[in-house]
Amino acid sequence: MKANSRAGSTPAARRQTLNPTRRAMLNIDHLPLPYVEMDARGIITRANRATLALHHPEQGELIGKSGWDLLAIDEKNRSTAAFLSLMSSGEGPPVILRSIFDRSGKFRTYEIHRSIIHATGGKPAGVRMIFMDVTERRNALEEAQRACQWLESALHSATDAVILTDALGVIRSINPAAERLCGWSANELTGMMIDELLPILACPSGDRTVLNLQAMLQLPCNGMAVVMTRERQQIEVGISTSPILDKNNGSVSGVSAVLQRVERSTKNRMSS
Image (tube, rainbow, N blue to C red; front, side, top):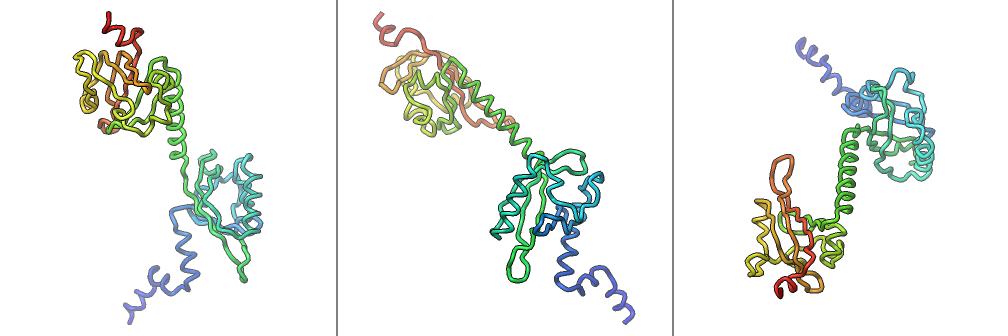
């Protein structure tokens, strides 16, 4: 009996004796992610340990504080209006992103997952929220977007025709110079097989065989070629292809082809 009494006094055993509401509150307090509850006025009524650990001490007591005081100034007005509209409609709230001043002394980006707290009778009485710090993820995404924009600008500015394909030969991007050379628009070519809409015919041997994509995937190719345009005109070009390598694992993910038109056409060259 004595042993049973001691076993029943352990923290785990004591939690089992709690009512479901109290047990849920205790579990929330130990969540690794910040958890906050606000009433219908936007006043913080509850915060778990993870939230308190992130709270900047210069902002004073968190409980009883307006949730808007933690946001960046440019986000306060629209966040307040959106919250009051949510309390009025009672509709399921979407996931949102907000910049919050935390213990780091900086504004960090948090993804906020929310659900409505309903009072007796179903009227919205507040909102419960879980916060996920996505600052690094957002920064990486923005950096990738900037890199893509830079690449698009570089391709658009290039005077030589540039065609990018994936490892299967599907065209993923072409620049304006390639559009002018081939007579096809980027929208028409993107997503199509390069040898279907833009057959590149081998020039030096005169056998007019299509260049081997697999060979271009393995080694850079340089030389002369004849390109068949949309108008079925054969244009002589200098061609330089190179495999596109994945910087993380070194695998080949596609081919970059640069085409430069030779001033004289194949027909003129052959007749001279």
